[in-house]
Structures are given as structure tokens and as C-alpha cells.
Image (tube, rainbow, N blue to C red; front, side, top):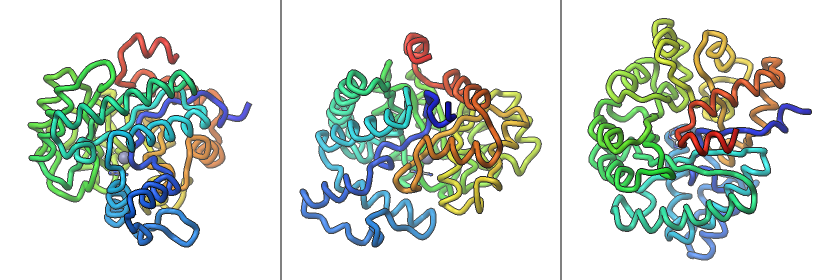
Length: 322
Ligand code: ADE
Ligand code: ZN
């Protein structure tokens, strides 16, 4: 069996970021929005660097307007993920793009997404859970609104709060209020850190937000004391190697610190982040990793066991997807 055929658990997938370019082009056509500037001559998303990527991402997201649009997107994403052998995924969903942070509107979007996910689970055999996502460069006030949406809908489907966006803006601690609100509502916590921010950003995430998982976190490799802290606290990293390479953090997978992090005892998992933006899939990630580090079936089974343990779902769901 090829390692790419193994059943997979994905913990770090942005809902809008998983939208195929053809899907976004079709919506733009239906809504008569000109988005030609965000596509290259092959029809893929075109961006120059991380900040430009975020701009293109938000332009693409601008045509995802109604709960029905998100329902269609949910089905498309889950069908594709199931074809990749993914059996369980957690996706980042932002109230900023689903009703502008208004709780009543958010409930409508969430309802549509959940219904589509339930149908996709029956049809494709993949389980989805949602992580509500404040967007860092929208600022702490918007993050509070997102956290309120999360707290109001916390349960067995909305399972976490996880901040994305431009790590260059402000500090993790600026968002402590939002994370505290989510924690009090029983939600599990993760934040993007140590992607474009250095090790200090990961220290802040641990110290100021007290998260149990970190989105990316790969730049922790630059600070041995931080590696010790991640190991001691058993914090899980949601590593997205293909994303890191395309966004220019590392020249190639061979230079990526995934294997070094794992060998140092850090709990690592593998995800795609925004697969069509980075020309990747879960199969492709596994194939690239196997080729670069010589990992075999046992290594990938262990990786998925770590992901299963770090998943934010309840234990009944965990037992079912095992
Ligand atoms: N939003 C979508 N993808 C992201 C990434 N890789 N980093 C931060 N925010 C994001
Ligand atoms: Zn991400």
C-alpha cells in the first residue's frame, strides 16, 4: 500500500481557502463580479507573497456571499477531501465572512454548512468539525465578535477557536479576551503562530493565549528552549509543509523542519492549509514527505494517531473515526 492511500486526519484546513479556483470563478460569473486579477494564465490563484496571498484569498472569498454558497462550498471541499482519503477534518470558518460577525446571521451560515456536512458525511464517509476563526489583521474587536459567535454556537460541531491572518499585525496577547471567552464556553484553542512570526510569536501563543495546538509553529525549530516547552506541554503542531514551501518559508520539503520537529519529540501532524492555493492535496503532502524523509507506513500511522488524539471532537466521534 502506498502511504498516500492511508486514511488521514486533517486538522488545519481553511474553509474558504479550500475553494477550487473553478468554483470561485463560477460564483464570480453567477454574481457578475470581475475577479480576473486573482487568477494566472492557467486559471490558478496568482499571488506574489504572503500578504498578497491574503489579499487574493479575501478577494476570492468576496463571492462567497450567502449560506447557500457556503453549503455548496462545504460539499465540494468534503468530496475532494474524501477522495484524498481524509476521514476526519477540522476546518477554519470565519464569522467575518459568514454574516460579518453578527450572531444571528452566523447561525444561518453555520446551519447551512452543518447541513451540507451531514449530507456529505452520509455520501462520502468524511466527518467535519468547525473551528471558528478570528482574522488577526481585522483586529481584536472583530475577534471578540467572532469569539462571541463561537461561544454562542459551541457544542459537538463547533469545537474550537483558531486565529488566522497576518501574524505581522499586533501580538497574540491582543486577542486574549476573545480566547478567554471561547475557553469559558468550553471551546478548544489553536492559533497561527511561528509561520511568518518567529519563535517569539509561538511563546506568546502559549503564554498569552494558552492554546493547546499551534497552526504551523514550524519556526519553533529556531529556539531550542521553545522546543523543550512544546514537548513538555505536549502541544500539537498543525504543520502544512506544502503551504510553507509555496509561501517561501523554506526552499523545498527537504529543507522543511517537519522531521526535525518530530525527532525532537514535538507532537506533529500534517495538513494542507489552503490546498488549491498551494497546488497541494493530502495525498501529495504524504508523497512529498515520504520522498523527502523516507517515512513509511508506520511513520504516517503514528502521525495520524497524534492527529486523532489532538482532534477537538468529542470522544464518541474520536472512537468512530479511529
Ligand atoms: N489564512 C488562510 N491561510 C493562512 C495561512 N497560511 N496563514 C495565516 N492565515 C491564513
Ligand atoms: Zn492556516
